[in-house]
Amino acid sequence: MKLPLNSFRRASESPCAPLKWPTAHIAALSLALAATVAHAQQSCPFDGGDASLAKEGLILSRYALGITGAPLVANTGIPAASAQTVEDSINSPAWGLNITGNTDVSGAPVLTPNDATIISRKIAGFSGAALTNGLALSGPRNTPTAVQNFLLAGCPGTAWVRGGNAFGAPGVIGTTDAQPLTVQSGDASVSVLNNFSAGLRVLTRSDSGDFRSANVISGIYQNSVDSHVIGATIAGGGTEDLWYQFPYPNRVTDSYGAIGGGFSNVSGYTAVVAGGGDNTASGGASAVNGGRNNTAGGGASTVVGGHSNTADGDYSVAMGRRAKTLGNGSFQFADSNNFDFSSSAANVFRVRATGGVRFVTDIDGTGAVAWSCAAYSGTGWSCSSDRNLKQGLKKLDGKKVLAKLAAMPVYQWQPKGQNAHVKHVGPMAQDFMKAFGVGDDDKMIGMQDADGVALAAIQGLNQIVKAKDAKIAALEKANAIMLKKLAAIERKLGL
Image (cartoon, rainbow, N blue to C red; front, top):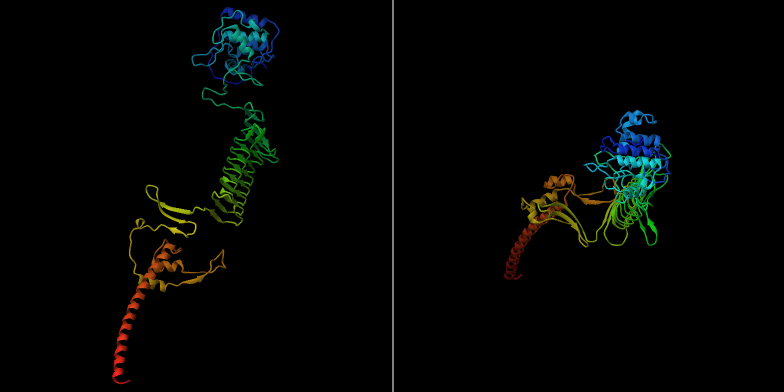
């Protein structure tokens, strides 16, 4: 390739004052420009065999003499307006001109007269010891052997070349002066790969319509998006069995799908698999958050996580182990038992929790449970009723409660909407509120209030029954006395 003096734009802002060479260096450069020794092919960026002494060599000579600005590029075919770009290219470490390795006080590479002389000789076709003859070398590479080895190695550590080159040390592409870095290709893919072709790939594609987007693929090289797909993302993951040489890649099958990582995951249109393994989000706008062997096949369905769950209903949710939500709009949670927990009913909330269920509605200042309701196998709902959780205790008059309960209407009724055919028995919330004034509002009846009213009424009824029992007992005793007296009279009368 040619020295990129007329095309490379500000790859580095490292300062470098114009070089002023002593007479010996100028003579050496002149010799280099006049030589026609056969050229030995090297792999440095400036040494592709097509650099010109009449252009690149002349420009370096002028720069070595301290010539800058428009005179630097005069009569070389390069516009005067590009002179600054040429200077920047000369000073840029990205083009491998720092042959001897000299740096300034800040550690930035500096082009020296020796560097320019050696490059000019290379352009002229010099090789071997002829490249450094007569030069007083300085810097880290201050011997002819060090310079030759550096050039033969493709100028490692100073530049990146087409097709790759050895650096002999970790390489860094970037800026050191808080300036942005852009890696751009002409409407083609951009890849950052390791030795196994794994890494990052950015592919620009258009669909069959009017949309254009980029697919971003990272992870193992077998990770893929289908040919018609646009706007897809595979953030990483995928794995390969090195023993059997068998890959477990991630794959996006439709546009705008995304996979965060994991392995053997598949994502469809606007669907997301966050990670895990062997998960599939095939429904439009569906999601699998993680876990293993999960499938979100319904539109806008979600598998929160776990193992072997299925959310096939639209807008459905499944989580846990082997929860199968087949109905639209349904939610299912399954515990760790290794059995399917499946339902095709729509718009239902189902939970398999064989260890019990508890809803906590309040905690104390330490985070301990205060108010809760729970259900366990073989029991009904049990809710908090600890005296220590209550205040304003007031003993009720059971007989008054009974009287109010007796006056409150109780109906047989059927619900409006769903299950309209099912018959029920009970009071109306408005009547209950009017009679007893308890609860949050007159639209609901709290079961604890209904139970409390029933218990208080039973106590009132018990009081009435006991009073009647006492009265009956007294009457029976008086009646027994009267019967005895009547029997005595009858004996006297001989009856």
